[in-house]
Length: 285
Figure 1 (cartoon, rainbow, N blue to C red):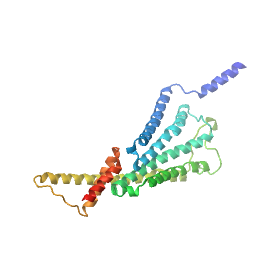
Figure 2: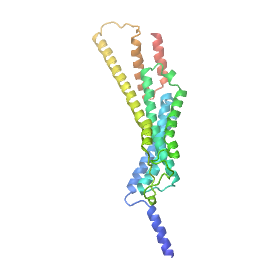
Figure 3: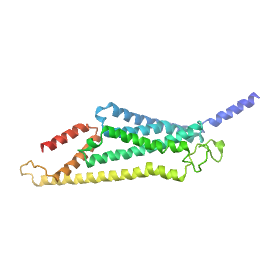
Figure 4: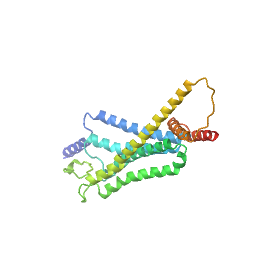
């Protein structure tokens, strides 16, 4: 009798063990998870520790790094177990919570990229009015709206059962064969269209539009700098005269300031000092 019990326990433990040949896969997946968590945590710590990096634009980067950190710490470990064992090993109640976090974190990551592109676009279009438009309070409100929208398309529909193909009460992990203990998210077509449109397609279109405008502004700035360089090279012997820019020259200086502000911000410089220098230059002129 004891031998039968012992053999049954051994078989149960054997069923829970990792399949042979998956040790390298498990090690590789663990390495990816640790790299994701340490990388994003290090970037967040760097922004908070360096005073020159604590500006409005980097608030959105911190939000992006936080969403990726949650993906590495909450979403990827259960996915790794599900991949290695071929079935859902955790509690059945945690299945819906895990899917909700998965949808929320990925949606928040895409929406944060959209907000970052919008921030860059405003900086290029009107660099001198950027600080008046994008204040710290407005930046925090944008981040809060980003995470709220991501939570509304993830936790609320999944908890209320709006994502299901049929609007009847049934467990989330119900499949054709319940003994497999699978955790699958079966969604209806309206939920898939609405969620993907709000958190993927519309943000992707906005990102493409803003970065195309930024690219056009950068090319225009490069042509202007090249034309000024050619004019100086053609007339090297003429004395340098201070010319007061007219109204038509102000948009050019705004675009130049915007491009240099983006470059300065990417290099980790203090944007406040850059704005003060440009404002002082305009006042002198």
